[in-house]
Structures are given as structure tokens and as C-alpha cells.
Image (cartoon, rainbow, N blue to C red; front, side, top):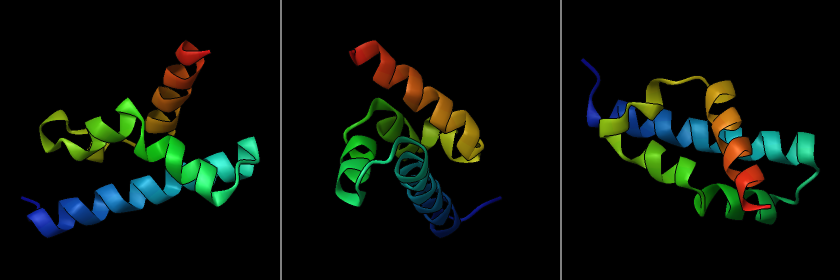
Length: 73
């Protein structure tokens, strides 16, 4: 079983990875990427341990974030 510290570390790593993808693939600035991630439903779900999002791959989470961003357009 994972400790709360390990789960928090996984969440932080996934958050950073999502921002990095936005920077590399969408050419966002660091500030824009972090703002998009931190203000997303995907991030809220990731922070809610009960959802299990922290167990998902960054690819899965990025797909979820892309769908969320597309729905806003």
C-alpha cells in the first residue's frame, strides 16, 4: 500500500508532466501551461485521491485534459 507521501509525489510528478506536454506540444509558456493544468477539472480529479487518477499514465491524463480543453472551445 502506498503512503500519503508517495501518493502526493505521484500527483506532483503527473502535474509537472502534464505541464511539460503542454509546453512541448502546444507551445505554451510555463505560466500558461501551469495555469491551464491547475485550473482544470483533470487537476481537481488528480488531487482527489478517491478518483485514482494518480495511478493513471500521463498519456491518459493528457487525453482527458485535451478533451476538457476542446469542450471549452
